[in-house]
Image 1: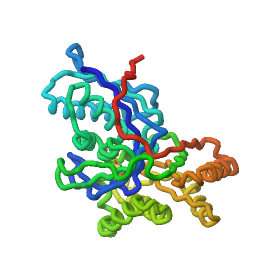
Image 2: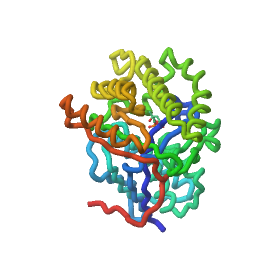
Image 3: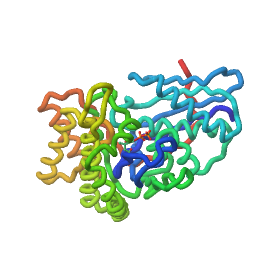
Image 4: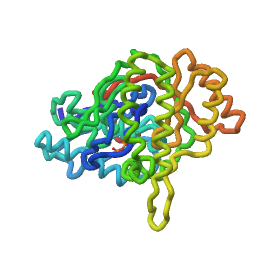
Length: 344
Ligand code: DP6
């Protein structure tokens, strides 16, 4: 088979990957934990053909910049797959996201997971889940976690072969809901890859390093025990700790000195404050955010409707008609499909 198509979902980090031990291989500082988001996805078709002179990337229905850089990353990733298969064929990659890139859904995660799965199948490689996770990681670290099903842990490891993701619990283990509130469709100004490099500039970095092993143990245990309150507190504290690191990662931006990176907008802050109030009023909801302004509200299935109504009411009362909501449950990992995409 020289053509294959794969579907992969973005994942939402519960315990974050922020800071790398090796930035060429994307080996992280710490173990991380995430959930695949079932309502949003990337579909990617890869075809290798002796008639193609160059790699070509066609992105369907997606606005936004950063294309040249994206194409380069894809081509570099195809080289990894080609060298694995001993092939020199060039490829056409057609890809479609069901969500805008760079806004808090990790498009690079689903993108590189789908590319790895489709590309390796198109080259006739028969790879294990672990091998697929390792290869995806080299494209984008968080993509390693979009390979297995459900709620997933990425073991940091200390070499390329030991740094991979595996399932923590299957998708139906726990009825967790993510109400993702997209507050802005604008692409972020500082990419995650750039942000990772700046993390160590924060004066709070040593505090984070010390806290990480305990966070991993407590969060995995809370998930296994389906202990929502412990989980929610860990989740929200973790998001705040990562964003504290980001907001205090001083750096030069050309000639301009910046005291840190802000992925938040005013709308992000409004939601973060609202969640605290809703919880004080008895609603069991917690928030987390990745490297973008999108706020992810985490609750149990039993509180889904109440959380959605609370967000809609806040949007209406504060004149924020542009917010858009996506309700996600724990999703499957990357998989092949017969429905190939066609370039238009
Ligand atoms: C904030 O995986 O996008 O979403 O490995 O450089 O491609 P690269 O970075 P990326 O970083 C994701 C950062 C995060 C946290 C997380 O997903 O754990």
